[in-house]
Image (cartoon, rainbow, N blue to C red; front, side, top):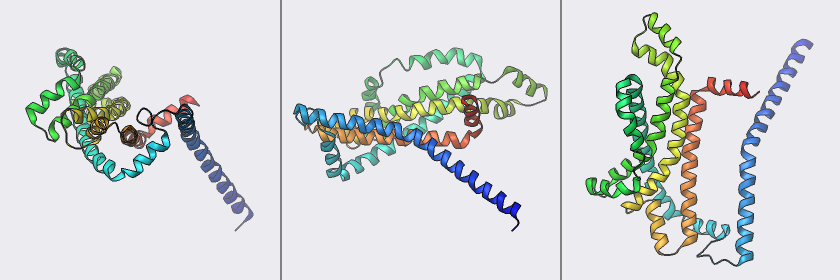
Length: 280
């Protein structure tokens, strides 16, 4: 190998190492601050409970919560799987409903004027208040839970997607129309790419709300699930076990949010690349 080739190879390896180091530093910059903050909260929580002598039934220490989580791991896992199934089905229904409704409203000004106010009004009705009615109509099975989760989650998906579809530059749409592009081609080549960042913003909000919706649904009528387990533990004044259940719910919500965010980064690399350039 010539000296020139050796030098080029060495430079390439050095640049690769620098790139890997930069990626690790960026990842550490995103991960370490929340982990350090969590550690600080847990230390202060543990110290406060021990120093004040607070009873476990009022506020358990983190060590008591993690101990309860380990001792009841099978119970938590079984009920978590029930809740996860409800969330996935309800969240999927919310996506279909929200995106479909947004497309209809964006394609017709008359439909938007007629339906958008009622879309907003639908969020003024407390979901826990209508959940018992859904149980009466559908029974104590999966259906009322899926409906409640979908109702809680679909609104941000619908509104954000509608805003994204309407954000397309009118000049671009007029140009495509002049070039003979039909409605479907204009939607596929112009409106959909413009709406995707808005859609994923709504999906991330809906992912968090779907977990809340699952708990609401299980409080009204269920015989399994983490929401049902919280009610049962509350009647038993098992506070440490309740905190453990809440932590599992939080982990489910974070995991779903993370999956949506990962899908956004994989599907919209151009969007995130543009944002990095703006911040640079």
